[in-house]
Image 1 (cartoon, rainbow, N blue to C red):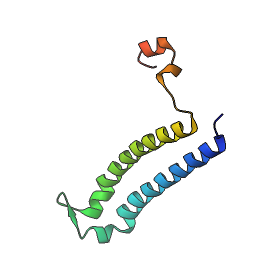
Image 2 (tube, rainbow, N blue to C red):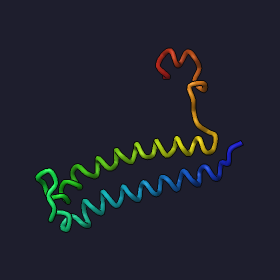
Image 3 (cartoon, rainbow, N blue to C red):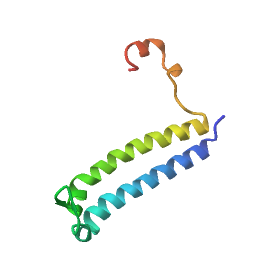
Image 4 (cartoon, rainbow, N blue to C red):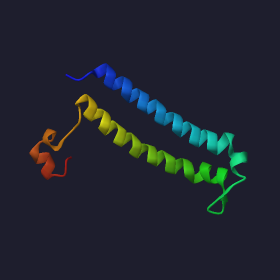
Length: 97
């Protein structure tokens, strides 16, 4: 049997860390530090402006991939990973729906 409390503690910890990164990038770089960051150019735009308009989105998408990778590791650690064996054969034939 897996350690449910440990699993959820690690899960919530991961989510809070990733949300902290997201907050710092989107709010910090896009609003709080925009004047300082605008001193630098990135792809021909002031860096603070670019972070507010594009960079925060790229970071958010990257965080999704980081979350998936970390959760797969966490699932294996606690023995709750999913496999194709868990999906009925008829669902696999339809593409896992």
